[in-house]
Length: 135
Image 1 (spheres, one colour):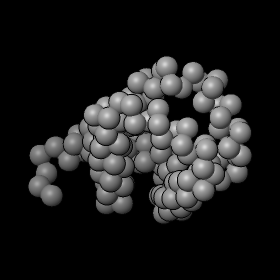
Image 2: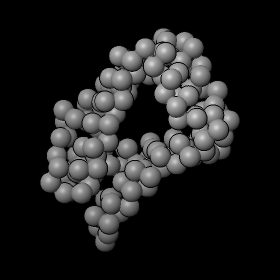
Image 3: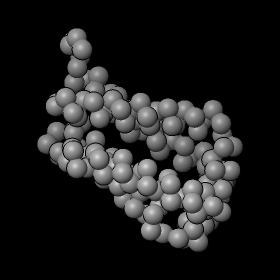
Image 4: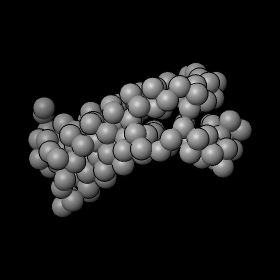
């Protein structure tokens, strides 16, 4: 595993685990944040810009698919880029319709699991790749 893959894997793993933990420790927060972002398009735009540039930085610097850890990092980079572009390009009414179709407020607990899965997976891949090594 390249040093860049190791670094990005650790960065994304910790970020996603902390994001998931914050969603679990504040269960009602997302039911307030999502509608507030739709009600204030400037928040969608800022979130979209930050997500898009973060994902694009990963894609441009690490578009590697050769081994599983590298592929996970690249996949997360592409997902962030696409999500950021969607946040920038889809109007607020589209996000309102999507949240309604997902029955978001009633199933928000399910969606808090999603960031934790790749986060814990990235940490596991990183630990396996470095078992027995000193960093």
